[in-house]
Amino acid sequence: MNRGIEARVRAARLGAALMLAACLGLPALAWAQQAPAASTAQDQPADELVPPTSASDFTSAQLDGVLAGNWRSPANRARDVYRHPKATLQFFGIRPDQTVIEITPGGGWYSEVLAPLLRDNGHYVAALQAPVGDGEAKRDAAALRAKFADDPAEYGKATIVEFDPKAPVLGAPGSADLVLTFRNVHNWVMADTAQAMFKAFFSVLRPGGVLGVVDHRADDSATLAMVKRSGYLPPRYVVKLATEAGFTLDESSEINANPKDTKDYPKGVWTLPPTLTLGEQDKAKYQAIGESDRMTLRFVKPSAPAAATP
Image (tube, rainbow, N blue to C red; front, side):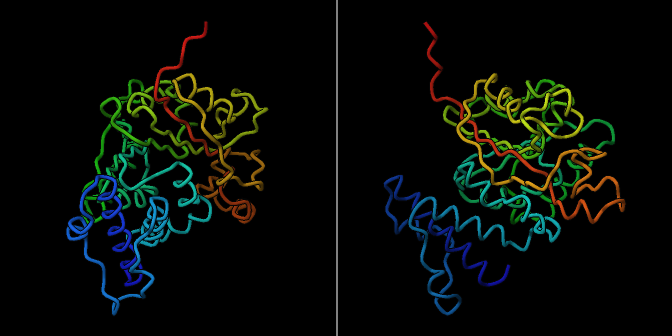
């Protein structure tokens, strides 16, 4: 990590310790002494020595430092322009002191952000589908485990759990603050396991906990039968899955929208980057479109059971 980035991360972590001390009513000095030491004025500009002044400021500063981390692969960093990780995670209300479960993180694109972000004050859990045969799930699980093993400084405190998609258990009931899933719901819909997955999300979240969903967005006028094998889903269908599991839709966002995406490709969403299933055929055309148009939905597990209708 270069000196400026390292300084920002250290300053953010110091700010986290001070804020947590204030919340718990503990002496700030004692917590500051336990926190990682910030660099001296000779090592960094003076403005980088000032800790954030609020929880949201801290989260923003911490995200900036993590997104600039040299442990992120160049290929993953290049996709920030399409995936908008900072704005997306802020929309979901992430804080570095939370327990966050990411569902089927693949090779670890978001793991490179979430595990370091949560390392010191929170807990990152990667929930992997139990590998079957020699398919993509098994290859992704192996890649993620290798990533974590190769860099214990960033990933050493992360946890990996495996689940059966037909009867998923993601952790103790009520043990998570935030469950995140990026571009996975369409796979569960195609496998007819989506209802079981959303029920598992509801179970593992604490009351008031948040479910964050990003997926390829079909037109809401489309029927499920029309798009089920395309990789796109109508937002109303995803909302239906979540609300039937007990969630309340809190808010939707256009953070990950792409109006260039016409959603009518020979190989569905996989025609577009990063997959580019057609190879060199019309490659420039699909690269100019970019990655898919995506819904970004925030659901909340109610703090109390809904009152019965008279």
